[in-house]
Image (tube, rainbow, N blue to C red; front, side, top):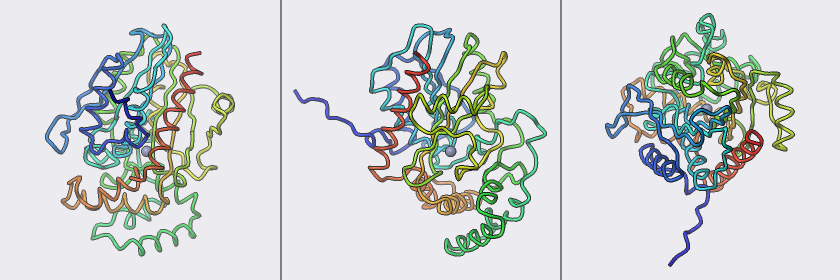
Length: 362
Ligand SMILES: [Zn+2]
């Protein structure tokens, strides 16, 4: 008999959303998880209805939970999906008063069609806006750059885009430009980083699902996996919390022996409006919660934005196929095929989850 061949991290990456989904369901069921599905009004490229798949491990009415989610940015979900499959291949130790919740992909449309946004061009990680007064407008700089970010004619070549983007960077300062472009906007429905004019169905149903299933929960720790921001392979941990964030970040940094940041702007990123963590503030009563965004860098910010811009252009000009080169390019920008990158993402994704579990479930 042959020993089971050892899988490396990159083996857990799937070629398509459909494959990732069936691997997730099979692995979660084999590990004793209870499956749940939240159906959306969207279809996959092969014509099957799309749902947010959720696996639940442990007690039905726990007092503490760890939620691991990915794919709120669609195509980025290939990374989080691989991390979850690897995690399911390891031994899960959950105490008797707790539960582990794996949310396979919060934006299955985006992952299936290789977009970062959902079926209505909404960036779901800008959609969880609690205060309606925030769900309006766009930064002045975004407005000025609308024609560059969201061109209405065939996109100018990459070099021209880089030149104009760099000129804008010099004019406004790169950190201010990054902030204005990516913080989320509520004015250009066909534009990049559009947060939507109301709660999207997926966001609304996910909130309802959490409200229903976390009734007995006093404390929640959430990990949400992303890709595409930061240097190649670099891991960034960004904390949001219902308590004192700076204190929480320092404590968690000690526990993990790793830097945990709360000020994204000071670390080459940006603050965003309507982020997923806001969902916990909408639960009644609001539990204690900590939300750790785990980000893995890929290519340079300009290359990523250029790929987003080209993909978005083609989507709104009649080509929605996941085979289109702009979509394959976006996938490479956000989930590189490089084996070392993939191995490392899975290693660090599983490692973070294990260390957080040891901490939260201690
Ligand atoms: Zn993301």
